[in-house]
Length: 374
Image (cartoon, rainbow, N blue to C red):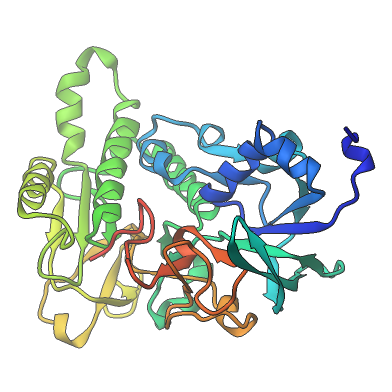
């Protein structure tokens, strides 16, 4: 049998993005029997990713609550690629070309391949492929008015998680640095979560747990129980949802259980509150304690103002716009790549999209654990 070094490379499989599905491929590529199949057939796998460390979103609520560190919720893509003998390219994909490849008969099934290149953000040569998979996730869809505000840290989208985790750490550090009497039951620290789906509620409950514990760390542990009850009133969490109910995709029993839990934790829910922007708390001027308020749509204007010190966004998701503008693949209005139940693109054989960036045309589903919105 020829050694791996004697077998010419005859096919290139390119993975764009370090999402969960691709992580599984990287792991299996270093294990039998897939490891031998790849080597014996002259296949080169290449991962293109804009980040080296990729987060596991299922652990994000635990990270927010303080149960995990930032390092513990991330996987090192470079190490995984080394394990699976996969070539790693640290760059963002900016465009993809496509041509139909050859058709072959595999176990009496006709399979059509693909040819094309992936264009990269750092100016290096394009990466050619014979088969391609895209797994770049999605991000919350923000109102148009927020585009000019995001750079001023007035809001914090939950994705991308790398950006969110740093912002969340700064929020926690701000609370730790505040004087012991900075917040009280009459002037609590106000956090607003925009989004009434499962992700928004996870975020609200996890944040409440963390922020109360941070305040509790400031006091004498001998009076912990008494002070914890006091600090429970120093944190005010509210959730804004544009729907008239929570968890609309879940059954009534689940909704009832969560409403009871939220009530027990004193988390306020504002229904029919469509957020379109933010503004200063008083007549266009920032008040002394830096409070801001949500700007609601015309249909929601009759509601009381929702004041906040920090605002987290966990709303309906969009995929990256370049999937629509810089590739020939069929996409939805929100830039999700349309795929069949095999995750192969509907009109482009040999190209696949998985995870939160794809749209299963025959079986639509929510976009990830923290992307189930109203």
